[in-house]
Image (cartoon, rainbow, N blue to C red; front, top):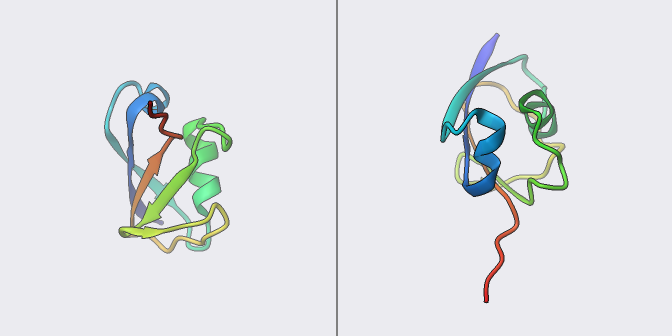
Length: 77
């Protein structure tokens, strides 16, 4: 089993107990969506994801050792 560093931003921190980041164990082939589900982050709330600083889709497979950054929709005005 490998680990993925997960960083969440803004209001998504409520799903990590206020922490900016966590390490999550993953089996090779598990996806970004799997990690979101394990953290309890509703997929409709996670609008933008990056794996190793590159845009990622929810179905992107992870192998371990990656950094996953997850952002909610950002409103402006």
